[in-house]
Length: 262
Image (tube, rainbow, N blue to C red; front, side, top):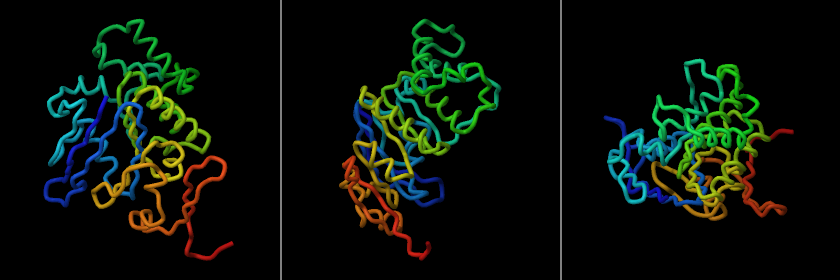
């Protein structure tokens, strides 16, 4: 799988562009973290990559095939997306929700095959949602629902996985567990793009970081090359210190408050 975002521009009618000539390439085995200030265009870029939105200019390619030329089912067979705030109004059980990830492969009304069941079971085991299988999705906490929706995405057996702020509802333990699942999937051959707010999470787990600023990719490369004090000050208007963790070797971003306090 090679996902190419080529010279992407996007603007709502009558508005200034949100994205301006974005170029990114993600291949199998990549874990790319997409970072940037609120409103930088991270969610918009992910929605263009899935074909949910149509770019104002440029194109998205899967293995040299334009996304615009592919039917939605063909896209869904190859790309799974975990949205930031996903909801279902119907009262499905957790297993029924996860099984929806198989719809692109078997159709909406076809019976589950043994392969479908295996994909669902493996996705639920990986996300530790087996114990929730019979519960209503409406009865779950925000963090539990997010794990269920990640299981749904993994049950699709996609080639690329796109995630928009997947750790929003999680405490630190579940943030780490979810990011480790994502990292393991990338090591298994998925092309992964994850939009994250937490720069330290991005630095700890991503192979590459792409920094969005003013609708463009301001930097793209290894965490240590992208997360510099100057780049963060420019993109986020925040004063930080950047150090290497002596135990892990990962870049660590430390806020430098301007206000005095205890």
